[in-house]
Image 1 (cartoon, rainbow, N blue to C red):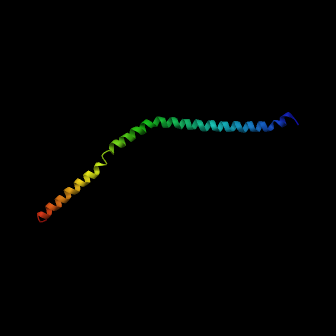
Image 2: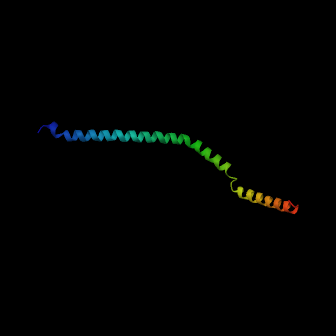
Image 3: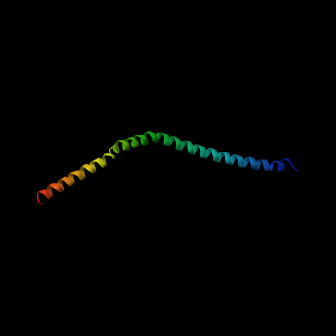
Length: 85
């Protein structure tokens, strides 16, 4: 048995290991690149969310406005009925 024949399995194994390492490095590099892009866009997203929170802070007041509107409507209907209309 020649030395090259006995080491063929090692060469194949090392080649496969090298290919796997290259693939893993490429995946990790792409993940890090995407993480950097996300971190650059995070302040913009935070500012947008703060604007949404500020613009929607009055939503609980909608119930009060509706109740006031209904009270005004009922008062108008009562006044109309009292005036004979």
